[in-house]
Amino acid sequence: MFRCDKCHKITEPHEKPIFVVMQTRPKTYINVIKKSRGEHQEEVRKESTGREIVEEQKWCDTCILLRATEQRQAINMVKDAVGGSLSE
Image (cartoon, rainbow, N blue to C red; front, side, top):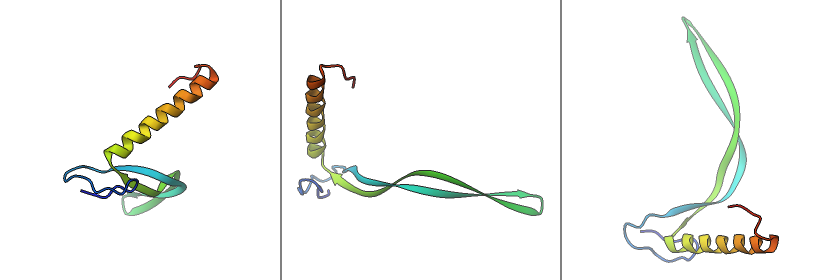
């Protein structure tokens, strides 16, 4: 049971929230790999880049279905405007 961050309704017990990512940002990660050769231990630092979640919201099933319907309608409107040459 949780409160939906979009419609603010309290859901039924045992209903699972769906987490929707609202904002992300680029992130650089530093991975330290320790290698040991006999008595000597060596550290290797490796940088990698990725995305970090800044904000996420809990949505109920109804809000997810409404969003999916809105997105399908928007895609269909664009397809009609372009002449149906877009692929999903």
